[in-house]
Amino acid sequence: MLESLKKNGKGIILLLISAFSLALGQLLWKKPLENVDIPVVIAQGFSGIWLLFLKVLPGFIVYAIGAVVMTIGLGYGELSVLQPINSMSYVFALILSAIFVPTETISWITIVGVFVVIAGVIVIGGSSKK
Amino acid sequence: MTMNPLSTKEIIIIVVILLSSTCISSLASYFLKKASPADGGSKLKLLISPFFYLGGVMYVVAAAANIYLLQKLPYAIVLPLGSLTYIWTMFFSNRLLGEKITGRKILGMCIIIVGVILVAVGKGK
Image 1: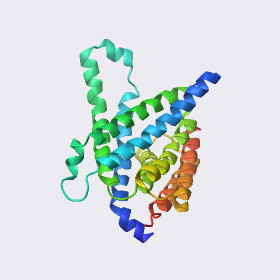
Image 2: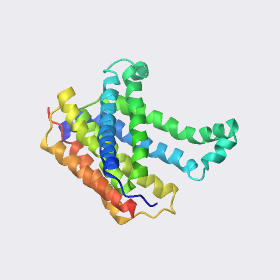
Image 3: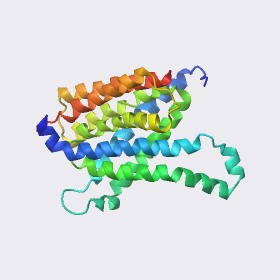
Image 4: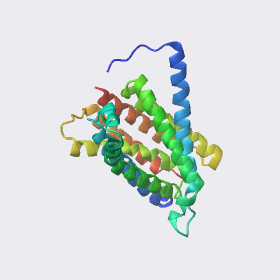
């Protein structure tokens, strides 16, 4: 396990950062879209669409940074070990929504699921022998 | 949100989209790995790699397919089915990169899939 952490360690950390960006980016572009009436925006013409674009832009920038970090991370270690770490974005999404959208209730089944995902990532993260 | 029962034709379309979108998403990460610069030199070299943009576009295609699936099937089903991506990745990393499929990797993947199913079931409530 230590051997694998040494070999994939940088990759694992970078993939965790990219999974976090994925969750944060999603929160940043989905939230502003929730109360948007698309036909109304289109009726406003260019200014409406531009405003909508500016609203979702931060989310897309975070996404793009996440993609760059992921690409660098995949260079450190095996794809079959690193790619499944993307599943941590569900965990980060849950933590972020608990912080920023406290009105949303979180079911205990989801919380159990989050710990199971973490367990799976630990098993896979420590799995490489070469 | 109510969903109409699906016809046989729709089910076939959904299965095909599901298999291809998860496959595309998995290949996208393969291309991003190819775009990743080797040790030494600037990491930002990846920005001039065509594989980086190919992978990015493939992710967008997979995301669009996911939005389509969410209109046809409930979230609690679409989310776990997206885990097929991990199975594709195991396959491609073995075929294209010569990585070993170990029992431990399969175990970890199965645990992750179970976790994603639980997350989805909890959210679907």
